[in-house]
Image 1 (cartoon, helix red, strand yellow):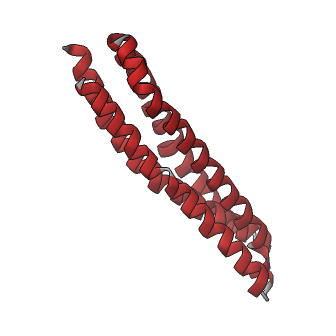
Image 2: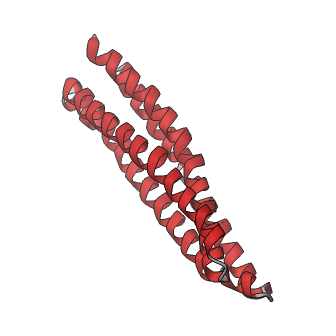
Length: 167
């Protein structure tokens, strides 16, 4: 029963965390509207589309993760009551896969993309390229902020699952 509480606590923490993607997305959308309404220079006008795209992507990511974790939270007690050991095995496999995914995507690919975008600033001087690179960096930093904390929670949850498996 301890592991069900740990799973439920993890999912609730994720439900608290994922709306930050939506919040960041709304900030990007507000910035896009601000650039559209108030932008007078070429570089300011160049930010309209990149910030609109970044905001939309962050909102989609946030909503997708929120509803996925909300349904997972509802299914935890059912799966645990059905077969506790299978529940632990399934969650352990999912947690291990997620940790590997974080390592590959969040902590390897995203920093490489950020570096590439920073290099773009050195080599491209068109406003749209600069605005796109800066917006991509800002969006990826938002993803790193949220997913960095999610990785920490997942790591703790994985360790709890491992200790339950050993019992």
